Length: 507
Image (cartoon, rainbow, N blue to C red; front, side):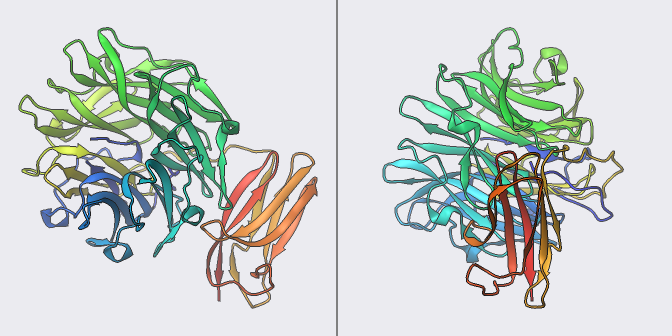
């Protein structure tokens, strides 16, 4: 989801966590998966994992498990140049009395921080809550209050991603009084806002919507794949506007859709995979690529998996500059599961690991999956983590030096923008961070310094402006006091401009 940096000299890693839903992720190496990690032992988790890389060698994994009080709780682990260790002192992230937790989503900003959004049951309904990880500690998003749209009905999050280094996007479904509808919300460091003017992004005349999966591209475009009334739907964000894409064609002798996954290739092509029920009464994996004008069906429109008894979940990840990798949980005739992967380049399909099983032997059925990717170019290595029905998350690791790759496309040109000079500020030494705001037309502009969780620190500008603004911040708050060392956000909002940049204060 987060854009990957250019290739570097040291090995990078990828994480996939497996437990019934596999979610979309960015880049995997073409090399096969290696052996089991963590000494072959499981992490103490077992439900709905989600993961994201904080840096090239550090990953964050969040997953649910039943706590000692019998409630479903959310926990987090990290891995950096060694084994896994629990975060938050091993305590639950959702430490609120009377609340069960499920459906975590994790997104990283590419600068060592991450957001964890989850659904918590309280007051008779599921609401969305968030935690911000600053590299060491978890802090509540939105002051610990729900981050959903505030409607009285149940809310669930299936996916989160950063549209740029400072804007977190969250795809969610929430009951609007008539049906469960699709919404996208964004957090720019100062507060939450509704995309699309607060209107639902799915078909208002359609049925209930579920399983939204959000994918973001390096150029700022994004897409959400979802299932509405058993039909696959896709909406895309381009040039600041959301619009519906035509759905891929429905193969003959298939019905329904479930568990979509989506990802962008560096050239802007969108790849979507989905489960469809075949004439044999089992679910199979079908994949399509949007080339900007039409969908191209993979494998001649036939399933890309090789399961005779059906598939329970899937994941999709970029695999080099021109291909994606799709992992899936295959069912067998005895009710067991097998995890396999295929590589899709154009419309051609080839197996990964020679079609061999990837799950941990003897660990029990795989019940859900998640995928994370390290920054570091087109040849990243990886980690596959599998949550089994017998309890615990097993990890499978591989390492590989990055291979040469074509440079990824940079951000799209914009008529308005923000430039920062001196993003690392030595407070108290007479230094200032210079902020230059370019505007394409006259408009009202507000520029704030906030904490990473959105608390206001200083207002640099708030009023009508035209042309450009030259501002400075000396590391002091509204009361004229020096702020504590750490990371802060520069949040700029106008009619045609929205930006969030990271600033660091040192002493």
